[in-house]
Length: 159
Image 1 (cartoon, rainbow, N blue to C red):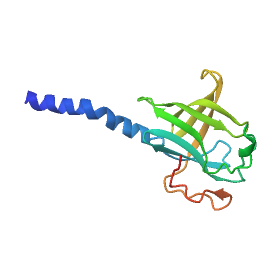
Image 2: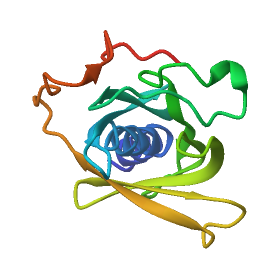
Image 3: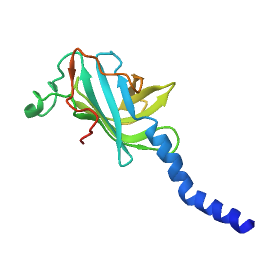
Image 4: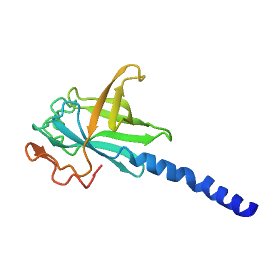
């Protein structure tokens, strides 16, 4: 019996943490209303890295404040503005970047889920020098609004 226990313990030691991180990593994936409820953001994971993009908006979303003049007329629907977040093994996704289209700047950030809502903190330098936004999760089967502007195929992420 001790050999069986040792074998099971060894298997869990090797694969157990992977199962735990896989479940936790996917807990953030979904669709969320932005704080102003005039856009829907899709959070998705590719190879363990978390990204986010607007897939619906009430009004056209142009990148008018982008520091690159060539990008100021691009449509922001479908463009990842949350990039490179990795799960820390506890309860946060860190080391990513958040692009703020309202000022054209990119910030460091942290993501976490709290009471079913996505919390996103963007900051410069240290987390203390930033702000947190709360995104309300849509139900899994809730369709996008029929008015406004939507991505053609939001179910197929492209980085």
